[in-house]
Amino acid sequence: MSLQGKRIVVGLGGGIAAFKAVQLVRELMRRGAEVRVVMTEAATHFVGPITFAGLTGKPAVTNLWAENYAGEVHVELGEWADAVVIAPATMNLMARATSGQANDVVLATLACARGDVFFAPSMHHRMWAHPATQSNIRTLTDRGAVVLGPVTGALANGEIGEGRMMEPDDIADEVESHLAHADDLSGSRVLITAGPTHEDLDPVRFLGNRSSGRMGYAIASQALRRGAEVTIVSGPVHLPVPSGAEVVRVRSAQEMHAAVMSRFDRCDVLIMAAAVADYRPEQREAQKIKKGGSLKLELVRNPDILADVGAKRSQRPSVLVGFALETENLEQAARDKLERKAADLIVANEASAALGGDTNRATLVEAASTTPLPEMTKRALANQILDRVRTLLTNPSQRPRREAKQEAPN
Ligand code: CTP
Image (cartoon, rainbow, N blue to C red; front, side, top):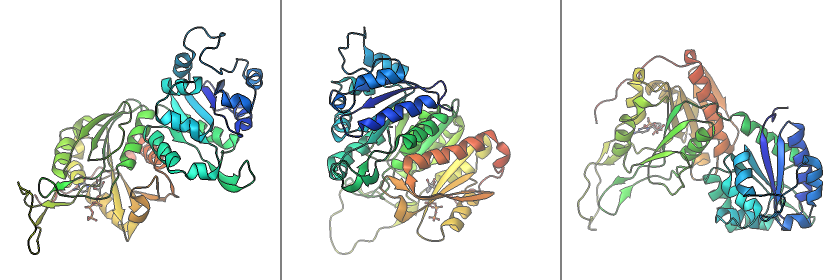
């Protein structure tokens, strides 16, 4: 019973899969959790609150004005819960959660949630594929919520498509594995770089790359959830800051270098997820470059941040993680970087699988092991990386003692 002692609010939206929430509540309780139920008014058309009262021994709350609750039920439940699981999460409910509405007990509890938030979407496949839903999912995920499913299968009208709510047992598995990590990085200071760098050519143009920053931000929000103190040194990205993280905004590789070098001796873990430009224009023109004939750009090397920290690794951090984005010879190239930059772990990505999207396929390369992982969400990959970081932190013998060779000055 590995949810023993955990407190979980199950929130229902108004969808046909609401009947499966009954099974979910039972399953969470069977695993040891204490469960309370909140429902939208629409959800009560699909399943009765009395069913949940019978199961949990507490009344299911269906509106903010419930007479059997003195005080603010949403504030109390938001504070009480280690996790809030919205199942089924309808298109409408997620849209309202995204826009920060709090006009029913489910949304208000979500808005007050102190613990982890999970959405198990359930809707017709065209509603799921709708750009509004996809954009809302992205926003909710960027804010740290976990979206479980949906899966492909038979929908309410008999069609087969992506939109079916994950099975209750699978939702319970995910919630359980998620809560199992809680606080295992507490006391660790984690510095994460994220996003691209922009190397200015003139006041309006720059050289950049297609990194979205999502991987680094996913690591940041998972590290926070696991109890770490987190600083993000962030290149230019359009992502919400995970709540609780300190953010240092930079633009160029040189600025990122300065921000990391002035902080790395105060952290236990450095994760270099940023796509740092290896080169910058030799000169930044003060005025906008006017068109003429052909134009030749002279580029010079940027400092290698990871290698520079690797060269000083006796001064901390204890664990050094780099990324390698490759288009060929993935593992060998990652192993070279591991050695050259004195890192403990290189997360090797194929360029085609890594950039921009919500999923990633990576291989974890360490001195004594190579672990290819299946394609997974960036959140799931973030946890795989942090699992390794945690092991390396607690087992210094698995970390190399060497230092990186300092590269030629730039
Ligand atoms: N990195 C860095 N500073 C740079 C360039 C890269 O700290 N100037 C870090 C990245 O954040 C990443 C790792 O080094 O964690 C690998 O980046 P990559 O550009 O693939 O490494 P290079 O050594 O530049 O590889 P290549 O020789 O293939 O260009």
